[in-house]
Image 1: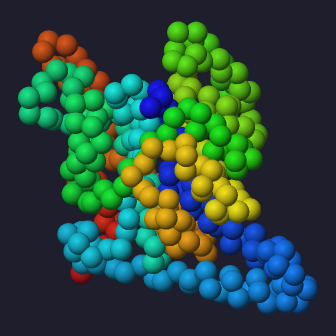
Image 2 (image 1 turned 180 degrees about the horizontal axis):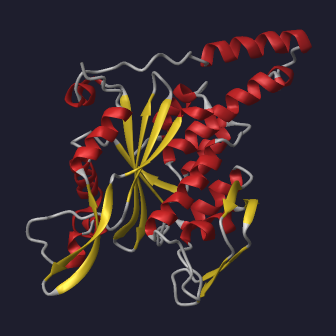
Image 3 (image 1 turned 90 degrees about the horizontal axis):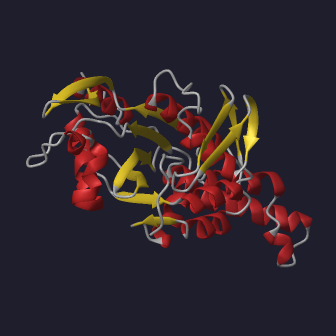
Length: 329
């Protein structure tokens, strides 16, 4: 495969959720032109459209509550997707997207690439960052590691996407609206691919190329950048994701089947369409964003100082209890 996107850009989950929601909204607004294409009159077309919408749409159910996280993990209907953005053999960005098909609620957890993880037999400082796991253990290894960090929740599917896919999928949706916090100007001819970022401050709609640049940016050539470093970039990525999730698409099958080809995933096309169908009727406000709880830290390894992101297991559990709707007695 090509060089993968260096930064997380969009949840694969939200790709088909956005497409699905867009189809549903389009059906309700436009009475579905398909009725016209098969020879229906106006009133017949409206009846056909209403019947189709009623058949596809399922009212969201109240999310089932559980008394413990273990019980929730065992019995919940949630499907969890691992989304990876790669830099050669390193996972430069990692995201866990959890979707409940019954309640139509999605929760997105960003996992910083410098998250500290101890692996037996891998004692070098850079090998203790989560972004190094893929290089030695592949997709299965990173799935197991993410599951371990997140209190052993199951990771059912994965998805990875390359630069070309990022640009084309965002362009399929007509771009994304974001609020650029300050002028972004950065040139790096030796990066892969080369960077030539020039985005002005302010709220605007970015096409695929500029949206990718927005998500790759960390600092200007004069070293002015996010105060909180990689966490600032995660917030920018989540802003793109949030904007994309609210876009309205006109055709579920067209968007999913076209976008599917830009993604490396273990989700079959029929499963993807099925997940998308189950997302029809999802409210835009039913997508929540999280960052793995923790804080930056410095640790000496073999007489060198390395910067890590150290997660807080107690706060991780609390976050997952919120996601899985655990209501303690």
